[in-house]
Structure formats: C-alpha cells, structure tokens
Length: 262
Ligand code: BTN
Image 1 (spheres, rainbow, N blue to C red):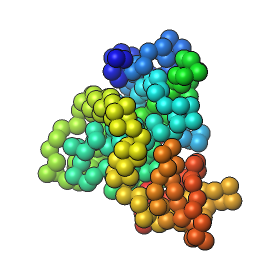
Image 2: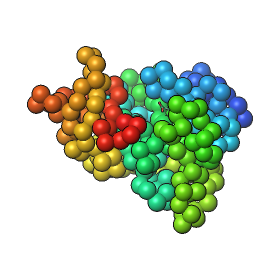
Image 3: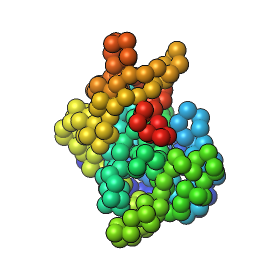
C-alpha cells in the first residue's frame, strides 16, 4: 500500500508558487503524497495563465504530488477529485453548502472560495503519470482585501462566518489544511474502490450542475446551453440551444442564474 497524502509535508515561508516549486524540484516529485505548503505565495498561478491572488497567512496555498492510478488522458479527473475533497473539508465551516463549478472551482453563495490548478509533471514511468495538484483556499480576511474587480466574486471562510454568527466553528487554517489532506486521501481511496462513475455522481451532487443554464466557451466564442451530465472522463455534456449535445472539454462555463457566472 502506498503512503497516504501528507506523509511528507514541506513547509515554506515564501515562494513564487507552490506548483512551480514542486515542478522545479524533481526530488519533491519522487513520492506520491508529498505536499508543499507556503505561508506566502508571491506569484500564485491559476488556470489559463491567470494569477491566483493570496495574502500571507490568510490563504491556504499548497500543492500535492499525485502518482496517478489513472491513464494520462484522464488527468483532468483529478480536478474533480480535488474539488470533492475541498467541499467535504469546508462543509463544517459554512452554513451554505459549498458548490463545485466545473472544472475545478469551489464556490459558496456564488463566490469563489477555492481554486485548483492541476499540472502534469514528468511521468515516473509510462504507466504512472505524475501530477501536481495545486489548491488555494481563502480562509481568513475578507473580500475587501481583494482588488475591486474581485471583491464581489470571492469570499473567505471568515467572511462567511461573520455574516452568520451562529457558525461558531473556529477557523484555523492549519486545521482546514489537515482536513483537506484527509478528505483527499479518502477520495483517492474511493476512486480505487468504487471507480470513476461513483465519483462523477458525487461531483454532480455537489455541483447543482444538472439542468443549469450556462454560457460556455467554444472555439467559436461563448454559446448558450443546458448541462445534461458528465462523461466518465469528467467532461461536461451540454445541450446546445440548437439541440445538439456538446462534450465540453475545456473553456469557461458561466452559470446564467448567478451574478458573477459562478
Ligand atoms: C484557479 O483558480 O484558476 C486555480 C488557482 C490555484 C491556486 C493554487 S495555490 C497553490 C498552487 N500554487 C499555485 O501557483 N497555484 C495553485
């Protein structure tokens, strides 16, 4: 049996990006489950070349080394698994259920609380792809800390608790971190025991995606449709308004009923 997630934790004070650190340090890629966490990220990276903004001590920013049990073409599936683990970990901190937004954002009340960036590392062998799962969670602070264009699109665990004083679960970023690692290990075990289809169902359950009216990005620009399901690879099935069924592999998906698309 292989060592669990978090069997080795490398703690850094300041780094440009924990994902970059892992990718640039082949030694940290050697063992499945190694985690690199930084108190402060100076150039956090998001999907599609975007920046991931974080504040020292307020956001959890860490990367997990995964030696995949899935084929190379299934790497995207790990985004879904990471999202499920984060939702489960955050559930006890917020009275409003965290919701998954394809492919790998976690939202609460339509605002982003966590972003996930999965990147490929050189494979260990042809049968064992290696990936770096970067997770950024907004724990402390408030949306007011963020630049104006983001203030209405992000939330933090602390802000959610301030707006709902009945939630008295204290926020200790280290505890949140440990919870995410525990749930990540559990979800990887579920993958081995139950297979992908059970986790596709779990992901859909936590997403409210089924039947959602969305605007989604295609090579011809954004078009409108309705989410009808998910493939075993983790791609969305979206019924285009013309009636055709699209398999959505990449590109943004914006929810029509949400003020910020989330
Ligand atoms: C996104 O929202 O587009 C993904 C954000 C991923 C952020 C995390 S923080 C830890 C890891 N290091 C990075 O540079 N990015 C990921």
